[in-house]
Image 1: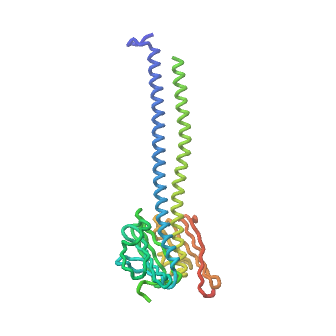
Image 2: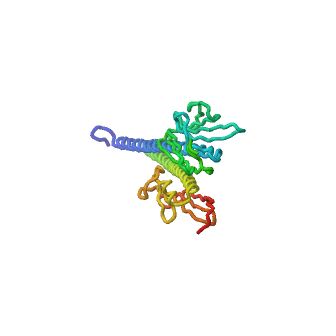
Length: 176
Length: 141
């Protein structure tokens, strides 16, 4: 039997079946493609967020841990004080090595926490310090009972505060 | 024609099966990714909680009275204990907007002043806990 256009009816049915099969294959392929892309994007996003969080944690922990350890190492009567290195606010850790008075300055200068270890009254500026950790800001405040407040701002945009009680009761520079 | 049709059906079934296997594997992967994200968040919270608890311990050692600690830590003194509320960014805030809580409970035993320091989330689940003590030289009254 033939249809109006002269095509055998059996061949028409076959063509439409082929088209349906092809459409189904393309549809399944499209679903597979979108699922794959979604999974890759999700994985990439989670990876970058995890990396960023790990970096922030590391920055925070390293900064405060380093400063705290330096203070604990130098903590003796009058050894810990806040002051300035030129015009830059700094934490001063005074030590005595066989009669030679030395001081370790911890301060923020040009984007990083810096440390400068020199003999007392040496005329060196903040640019002479060794950069340790990249930060956005750092501040030291000490009250009259030896409680030191360390406030650090990080490149990620946050800021955190840590308190440290000097066992020897530190002092402000210049006070008795 | 019947053979061609049966071939298509077999092919489609294969593709469908492959897609199902892919869906199962990708759901496992997605679950792992979600878990990784959650662990990363927990790790960040623990890190911050340790820092906050450490600061609390130092404040206690310097001034072991609840009122004085509350002043230093920007918290409140309640029933002899000090409570500090923190927001999602671990900045001191009020009780209403708190995501995390630092709770310091001082106790006196002979000449030693103890403190139990607990950091928890807003639902009360413990994140970090530590104990510290300071010798005051005062006997308990």
